[in-house]
Image (tube, rainbow, N blue to C red; front, side):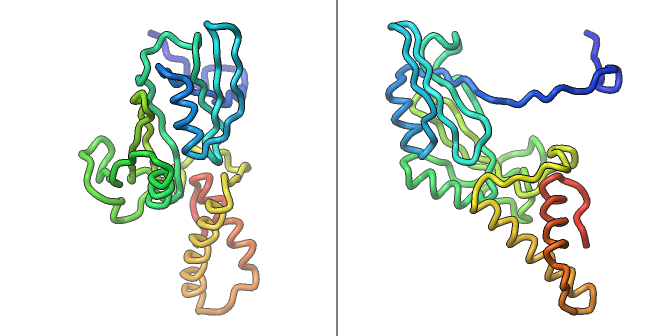
Length: 212
């Protein structure tokens, strides 16, 4: 099988934005009640006769949505698996539990592909802390805590936060880092702290080198 590298193509990459994940379910109304109960936004419920129905939900803060219904996919109910990215694994787990989801305890992995260990990653590293839950059909969802992206995972000129809570958490991390910055510069007040915060938050989001 041949492999085409990005550098082999003379054409620039075209933006391809993931929009929808198909979630196969056996009971559409049961699934609709479950995802509505989680607080996900109901975008559509279209019916065309007895053979076709599509329901769309969007998780809070997500740019991508899910579809389920009738006549959408031959996949077996319960066979979908997806990741939901959060900035605070404990808060996300508590919120879902309060809405009736049977969420697992938080666990982490000391290394990629390593065994699941109890609790949040002791060092608070991004990509290492998880929890999981399933919908009534068994479609699985993994919560993964990410506060700083790996290099190249976010366009460096695009910085967006999915909620007020995410933005507030980013500001708190920037404030803590800026406190260390002021210690390194002799403890003097930094009058340009807004610029430093902005540079830190953009770099953290894009996975580039953080300012010191």
